[in-house]
Amino acid sequence: MIRTVELALEGRADYYDVRYTNVTSTNLEMKNKDVTRAIAGSEEGACVRVLYRGAWGFASAPELTEKSLVDAADRAARMAKGIGESIKVKSSLAPIEPMRDEVEIPMKKSFLDMSMESKLAVLESTYDALKDYDFIANLTTTYKDSYTLEEIMSSEGAHVVTKTPRILWAADIVGRKDDDIQSVRRRIGNTTGFEAFDGDRNITVARDGVASLVALLAGKSPPSGPMPVIADNGLCGVFAHEAVGHASEGDLVATGNSCFEGLLGQTIGNEIVTIKDDPTIPGLFGSFIYDDEGVRARTKVLVRDGVLNDLILNRETAARLGLEPNGGARAESYHYRPIARMSNTYIEMGDATFKEMLEGIKLGVYAKDSRGGQVDTSQGLFQFNAQEAYLIENGEITKPLRDVSLSGKTLDILKQIDMVGRDLTLGHPGICGKGQSAPVSDGGPHIRIAKCVVGGR
Image (cartoon, rainbow, N blue to C red; front, side):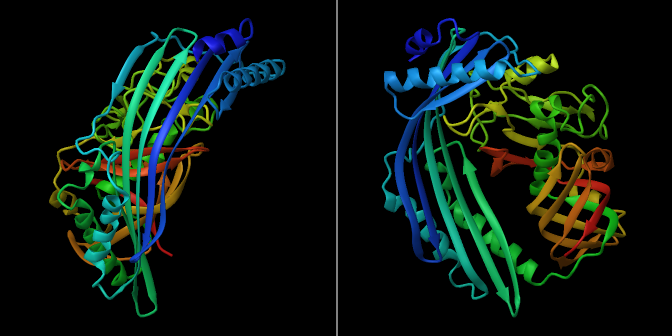
């Protein structure tokens, strides 16, 4: 492939790379006891990326023929040349050592050789475990797996081959009590094989969701206004991802769309706060060995002891910001060029106990997990909706709440975190959207926020 592209681009590129992917996947869905989707297949294709006189060109080739690759290279070169005549901000790439490597993330129980019936059994067992709860109005379960072979070759001499399995299960549970309807979602996601479900893990996680649903159906409206908030491991991870992780992505910082612009090396939070983005943790849903530019993945300590310490970078944003590439380039598929993206983002463990966090709170909220929200990275504003919450009165958890929202400014909340728990958990999986989707995970310990704005519906 690389020789074909080299000949097609002679004299028309300062840099180019070719990325080939082959994805074998399964996608299943059950609504209650009925199978509503069962799809299995594979897709392959390649893309060519060209940098010429500070401008990018990009084109994909859905057919792996010499003609298709030459056509893609030609389109990318013509695009780069056309854009380069009018572009004001010239692009460049921070230097790296071109890698030549072939790596594979192993599976203990490969899903590649498993029958469709074996995979459907995970959804069927989930339904069987929950079907006798008469307050459950609807249960939708999904199962997805993918095995991705990716090959990256560049004009600098890089040649990296990676093989990555991913598996994802989700249960959306809707409950009804009289005229009130509430819902919860639970997920399991890993870069592993079918061992992700060892010990009937899906049933355990689904039943945990039912317990949350019971609390929601009994919940009352929350108090409103600024007050102490304890965030559980899941909601802590959502804050790390949404409010801090996105603001740390190099392209947003470089283009003035992050509240962290110009703050690298400065104190932005309490000294007890350390936040990492780490694609090297084995088994997590957002893990990988090389990024989509062929740069070896590495741990990024975004916030170290309250100081903004690092950003998530691809080679282009690293060059623009005068920093070293750190393996943060990711692309959804061969249809997309790689951009700076998160992987596994979390707040590091502290030393506080949950009991210590409760002490001294006269009136506050204990919030768990997230059912969505929104973030404005440029202004540093966020609003999250907790999936489950409880009132805290005089240091005790007293009653369940519903429809709880939390809002604030990222830079304020980082300073308001006054306790960090010792109960770190990782592995809350998700699909992150930023023009293109990427598998990620987040996590953290319990954290206490001295003052956060609480609201309800």
